[in-house]
Length: 308
Ligand SMILES: [Zn+2]
Ligand SMILES: [Zn+2]
Image (cartoon, rainbow, N blue to C red):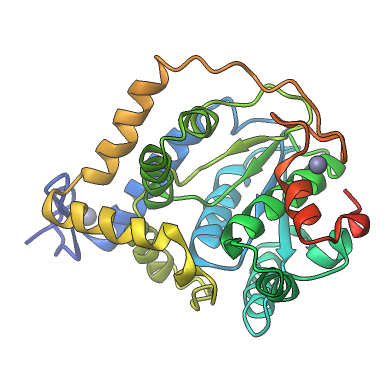
């Protein structure tokens, strides 16, 4: 088979489109798609973007592309933001990969730790939750607190946007999870931009790129990314859902795109009012009296240690 564009030998067959790509045309295609996702409203002068960096393939591919797009733009600024949750034997490797990347690409960066904000790390929390017989999924806790911390440093760093490395798979999984749980409010929040000034606007440059293509792109570019999966991820509901969406995609190429497209169509009919309240404890924007992070910390009886 040959590349549909330049007739060189094909190295990748994109099942959902039927197209064949050579390495160069594949790289160009992904780059073009991501540039289109961001658009001229984001890729412009005087913009500062905080990039959430885990050191994994998604975050480094995203950072590579952002650095390409912003290279020719004066006064635009990128800053890598890393959150160390404190997962023994896992996170330090990822952060080291991210630091090496930033040094190589000449991107400024900042590392913050769970410990800086809650005086403890994720491993300790998981143990504590077990001791207290709390049915708390490590990923749920980790996710909300990481999000809160990233948002905090993005505010401190005066970022206009916070870039998150979620790919098409992540988003289709999130949509499916919320459907299955009947969580319409969370669905709406997933798709709509928060206008609350306490949230730095989040962008997802890779939202239209399937995970296997992100992986291929990272390997073609020889990016040195952190490969080990998080030791807690197999415990998650999400990993179950990802098996289902992978199977769907296998049998019906394009299924992941269509899950997200259907969701975007549905969004037009969802009219969920903007969250206006604030958390009674930490003062951050929240739809309930007490935000999710504070609720978790309260259940764990470590709320008094919170610096939020
Ligand atoms: Zn080609
Ligand atoms: Zn709170």
